[in-house]
Image (tube, rainbow, N blue to C red; front, side):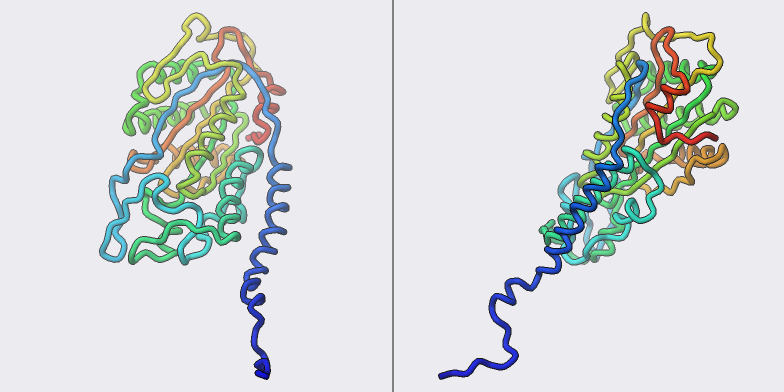
Length: 331
């Protein structure tokens, strides 16, 4: 009778070899989901508002980067699906978890996008193979079209005496071409300039950013946009992707109150990596706005400008402002 070879591995052992990875996935995912659910705030409704926005996550890159003598031109959903053929998890995708300085729903949704990548990697999910000559590290820091996308959000609570800012945004909504990258970049510049011109009226602010894989950037951006839009009772003035709508009879409200507020949200998706300084002081907010306003047409993927109130006679009290925007810090 043939004797078993000492030290030989049973076939089942080879089958079960990846059990540490599966165990890690079983332990890590419930913990991550518990943290995410605990971080998600309840939405709050306030006054009606206005909105300007647009963009596309499907446009082909204007300046493809060459890898190993070839050119990688993957479009939306055609590059990678959240895992890498040989590179593991790219370091930039961990930034929103380890060192993410935000919180609330923004942080919750950014983390959801990154957790999807981690879960796929822990399961050994198969994203597409890397193009010839591309290494895992190259993909992590990728080309502008397929690399990680920075999603940034700045929110400012201004004294209601900044009615000129509302008028500027209303005029911008009536004239801007939100169907073109150049028009969206102009909206971004004009909005940041309008905010920078009223530093004496800044009272509250927040600044957050995080990186997500390109494949989940559109859905993450849309969820953040919907979260901010849900804070409005209705959109009185809007100009989105070239479609304009305005109720002149309702807009252009005035208020004699001096302690009420105007809230402005800037939400941006950029191919360029951003490191905003936060918004703990007026100087930090100024720097953050300048960084956002400097994003070029080639890097700007999508933009949302949302403000409230916009209806006649509507005001935002301090309590309403901080309930709708709990992440705001006093400057």
